[in-house]
Length: 318
Image (tube, rainbow, N blue to C red; front, side, top):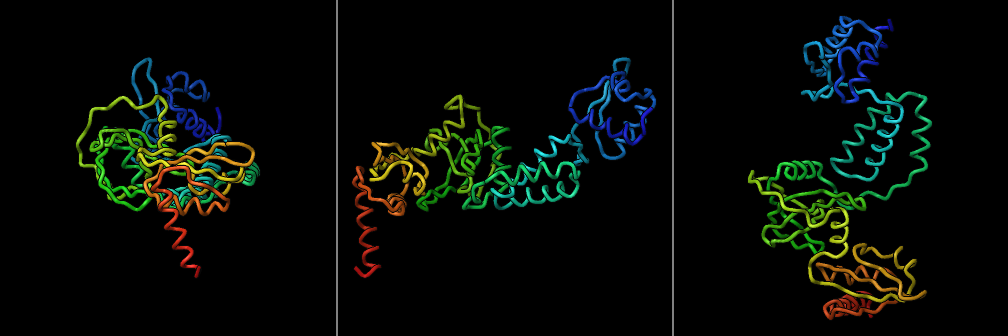
């Protein structure tokens, strides 16, 4: 018979696979008698591990959800993946999500075996991440939206557009999508009677009134692609088209207005098409690219760009 401590750890590792183990198979895997197995299971329960059991000749055991989070056992691969994932999350997220990742990462790094530290250091040293998001992600908002989507509950919130306009929204939430280090909500806007995507960091005053909705068929079999297209071309009906006198490779590195489509015209020029909820913001974003460009449409973007140029000229004393 194996050492009791070793046997307990092996038993816990088997149970954490999530499957239901027949008592005879579990005892055979541990090289223990049925009586010893029952005693070890009782010890796990005393330590806080919720182990359920079915009685009878075909009795079985399974680790189920409990009221508290008991200690977990990871394989080497699982431990490495968890630490690296938390490190990246801590670097890229802000606010509650980043703080939670930092806390969990600190706890794990203190107990990771020495043999795994080199693998973790190599992976993190060879991995680059983008800078943190410009706005803080509220972990509570993400959790509330996820719960509401799962239980088909309506949500209400204030939404701030890129131009700073604040509106009240009544939405049926369906999916949350992480794309480009930003979280988006895919939902049915009840007042606009259409599908919409919302940047979650622009959502405020979120409430779940308790009313439910009948689920609709999603607008696409691939919600990620739908959200990506919606982020590139928001349904504002306000689309600008600009021609840059520089190749795509140059403009793409300098363009801060990431939403939209950038396509090559020839080796020395490219065309940028985007939707926007603020011509003023787009005018300023185009000017920061730092290469010659011409506005093809619409007249509103041309007018805003001229006003911006006049303000800059006056500010510079010209």
